[in-house]
Length: 413
Image (cartoon, rainbow, N blue to C red; front, side, top):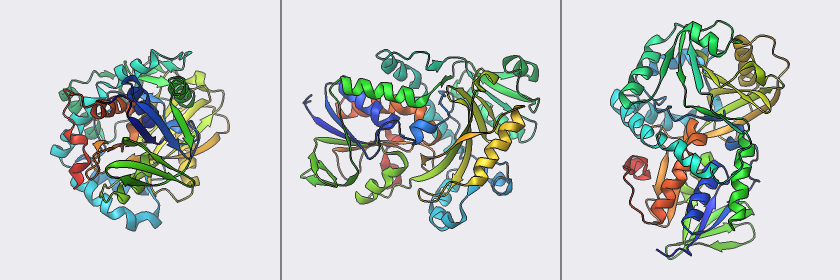
């Protein structure tokens, strides 16, 4: 394998930078393209900051379908739809419904577990080379719920037990002991002791990016207009120039579909729009991230204050931010915690999601020198380094003991 291969990466979020660092470890020459600076207000900046290696149970499962209409109609519910997007959404929704069987749910859970199990060690490989300065806390992650929809909670616990996920069910008293400031809205929960959280995802991303530059990586702030080929070698076209590469990795999250459509691959990538607000100066109220499952939101203590995140809104990439979703987050935060001040920083970001809730990691169907690494839905932040490590191994033609077929884009052809 020629170590001097020139590799282009489109997208400078956690996927792109992780891919770049693992490719550099193998001796490759790497250039990242993005129309924005790394750490810009995209998904790698605005996420919940969870490193959640236990999160193998997907949203597509048999118990969810009967609840969807109620979720859509509830003002505090976890799900929303931009009605002007419904026609575009229908093909994706039909595939999602087809994936809501027990068999498909277990297929996704098993294959998410396979890579989630390796997620923290892959992060540690990168973290060993930077000064984290207390930007990652190892205090676990706490999920709480009330006594509605208990069948769904039991299903999640059962599936995780079958996969061998380490989980500790907690009583109301134990929840109170862990997080005394939460109002008593809960009847039970699960504590994942080995979960971690970021105190500031943007700062972590920028430290990894600085490491990439220090290792002779190149970053070009340019908008990629398209990709051509010289034989089978990819050429990146920007507004003003063309750049020739031996291999190309597409890691631009929800924006990756533009390229896969150009390559004539019908990959049903859509976007779940996620929101956050901050309550400044309140991060002392919680010791760790807490997720209230009945309403589908969570609160993470960060340097910026308490970051309240959540809701899944289907509405594509072009619709404006929904004020009703912001109000929903504020209402939910105040439902969980007393005496919160006025909120700040309203943010909307895009989670790239496929209807079977597995990412696409691997080569393009039609172009052997193009690799995909996107579609990680709620787990993009957790899965960045392990996905990058897998792609770097593929490009280096190394054998891996993982079953990588489930992540291939061929499953949609």
